[in-house]
Each structure stands twice: as C-alpha cells, then as structure tokens.
Amino acid sequence: MGKFKFLTVAVVSSDIPQKIPLISIPIHLGHDMAKAVCFCLSLVQTLVSSIKLILFDRGFYSKDLMLTLTNTEYPYMILVPKNEKVKTELAEMADTERKKIHYEFELIKD
Image (tube, rainbow, N blue to C red; front, side, top):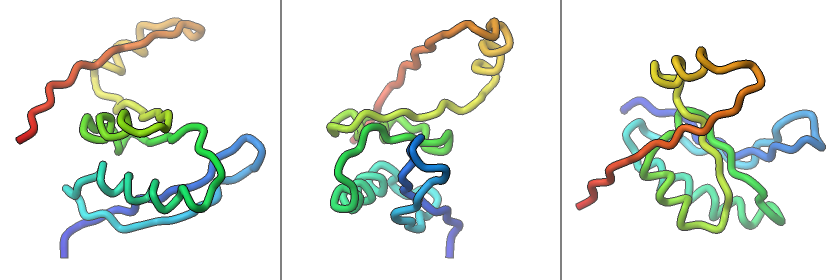
C-alpha cells in the first residue's frame, strides 16, 4: 500500500475559537488533488449554508487545483510554498509593506 495523507475540510470562523472538522478522506500521494477537493466540496455543500472562502495550506499549491477552483463559484486562497524566491522577497520587505507576486503557469494537458 502506498503513502497517503488526509484531506480534511473544516469550518474556520472568527466567531468560534477552534476549527470544526466536517469530513476527512485519505488521499494517496500522486492522486488527482483537484478531483478530491471537488468531491469534498460536493459533500460539504449539503452541510453548510454558505462558503465565504476556501483556504488551503501550502501543500495544495497546484496549477490544476487553481484552474479547477477558478471554474467554481467559490473564492479561494492557497498559501504559496516558501521557496528561495519567496524567502528573498520577504526578507527585503519592510514590516508594514505589502506585495503581490504573480506566478505564471504553463499548462500542458493531453
């Protein structure tokens, strides 16, 4: 059996002190992450009245997921992995400075 991680969907709100887990599914490494996220979203839609923002940690940074989410009605935010380019940009910034870095992807699909 291959290695896997868990994809967990939770309610996060400033009105409540902790995350409330809704579902968690095992995902094999190398599996189609975008498809798994869409599956989870389809399940969650019946559990919550509205989704204001979908927040993903750095492990979900993928162009396929971004393209898939762009075709949904949900706003989303995916944290960017802290690679050397990002670390250099952050080191050069003042504490109060804000910056947007645009990433370009080349999508090759058969």
